[in-house]
Length: 350
Image (cartoon, rainbow, N blue to C red; front, side):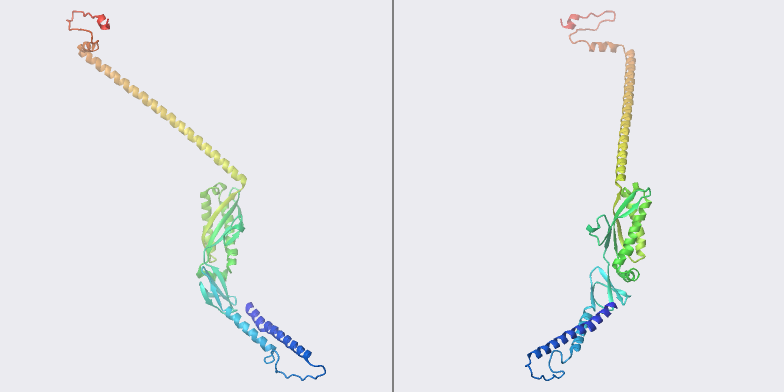
């Protein structure tokens, strides 16, 4: 409405006044120029109205009104259409009242001066909280969020919220929230920063220091934002924790603790390895002893069987004796009552 009133005042009042003033000034200048060209002492005949001169046929005001009306028609024609780009929709507000339906991407006609088209993005839009927002490529940027853990450690969260406005719900968003800037400020920023500040308080610093803990916190935050955003007609595609930063002294303490745990684990592994070696040595010794015991039992059994065989066959001893004699010793079979004589020199080779 304000645009309409402003346009009418400008085209039907300001422009005609300006044009009329210019034309009158031109007419006065022309008359002064003609007076300057007349001869001295020669009386001038008054000119009749409407004969010659600039604008005398229509008059300055008529020409001014004509120019103003022409300008009003041109401006009205230009403001009677709008173009909606791809990935956006337009919500029509007529004299401040939101109209049903939306303008889809393309060319649309609207009532000049009475209709205002508010554009909303239906594409995935990013809101990012980071340490250096001025260098971020997100659609909307902000600073990091400070929070604390359940055990009192201070943390800072950098995150990204990916959201969009459904085309069919854009009119409702316009009615209840406002334009795109109001959506970001009153819904995305307000809830994202609040929930990101509250959720870490339910986790310990040790939990949030791990990837598993950060993933759990991210899931909790996204679930809560989905509920809050949906109440205002906004869809959240994803909440992404980019980094959770801890105080430097805590980081040093955690790293020292991790090193101590690693050293302890290494020592436990060394002890376990030594125990395994010890047990294996005992098992090997027991196996060797058992082996020797079995071998000794086998040898004793062999001796016993051999003794029994010799007792049953005494001639076997004589046979083995003969088999083990030197090949150059001559021998023969003698009666049992004869003592054999051995040629020692022959046996020694002398």
